[in-house]
Length: 612
Image (cartoon, rainbow, N blue to C red; front, side, top):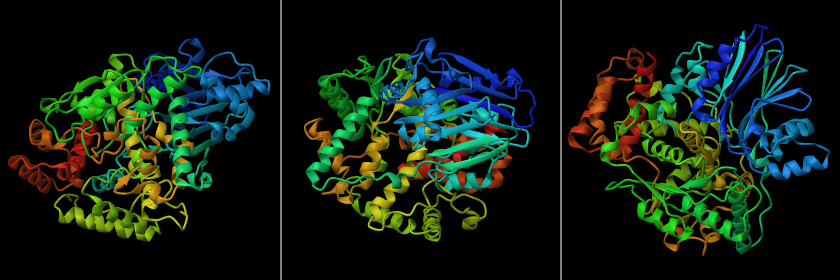
């Protein structure tokens, strides 16, 4: 896991070493274990790397890495979990390896299969490979966009990096705000990350499952992965379906325990993270495999004493089942302002809450030198985790609207306008220009996929949440907040084999008898605490925003609203925004709905004030 960067001077101008060093230094937090740079013979191409040493942490894993013949050079961020199996296959074809790293396996796979290597990988990645003979640059991102890749292109140069802020602060490109993206984020914070657009007009996102060829100054961008093309046949009986899910999940966890450094998990006490740690424990009992980390008994729990979203008792129960003594990080009412500017800067985008809990949790992993965390991300969007007890009517309504929206672009626009009208009616719409200022939805990866006609509203909704909206945003947040402390996050529920299998299952396997994730719950029977396995309580892993906005954050918010930021004032009716914030603060009536609707405006103003 690392930070990567690169510069290609399209018109042949020499790349100054200071330029790539500055760009690479801007992602230094992603790789605190070393830095490397590579320059082409005429210095028109430069690649940079910051290393987080997980696999082959010695000198063998240094990047940029060159192939044996010196033709290809790679910078790579991520992990290829099945690198041992691929290595054996390549050795059988005559490949001789010099190191124990998965990076060298990628180079050998490129020589053998070119683009075809991507479909053989089980992992997460953003990578760039330069061919010194043809002068072509190849970049690719993993199936579901777990690892980020941002780029900018002009007539003079092509520049890429692991983070938006690295490009924006590099001095290599001029940036300006994309007003349509800013407006979109105020209405729907989950409506941008799945697109190619960012808050800067000049900076683009390589979408999940896409690749780039840069040949003679021309970009070719292509989608290499579409989940619908890989849906497997599913077993005939329910019992067989449950057994197969369990097999896939256990193998996904086992593969992600391969590490040459200590690993652990962030444990919330909900079903997903509890299933992960209990399966890690079961894997050790069944017998560890090659390169598995024996130092895995680390669980980190964020506790919120007195807050509505505290799940500490359940987390401690899951840890006890797995035989792990958890580390508790208490986050209280007085911690709202703790490192707030660093947290917002590290998140590097707009979200609907202040992600302090996640940032503080990964900071503690870094302090204890637990550099890898197996977490439960993706399960909610894969199997419908957003059914809360007593909320079945709202769950069905969201599924119905999603089913309508999946039919066409016109239908999506209609549903989008209905949502905007509701936000305005509820008093949370502050954009200047009224509803006429609502930009059309951005083009999101997967939006135009023709879903199977037999799919119902739930499956249609989950497909879009997983590929286009909710999950891409969550993945971005967890990547930024973990890598701010040099922590690698691995996600067993996002193993591509498990994803395609679960997507192919009927809706009753995901939501039935008043439960979501039914297939996973049944597969984990007897393998985790029963109270958690069949628990109905669903709590998002968020900071206690209502308590904080009713308390310590109120002064910070007032101070922020007092700042003069002309670009923000042109976009937002600040009088209406201030009045809404003051009413909530004076009456101490902040709740989750008001907090998540208003916080994006505050987040955006903070971001604009920072760069103005």
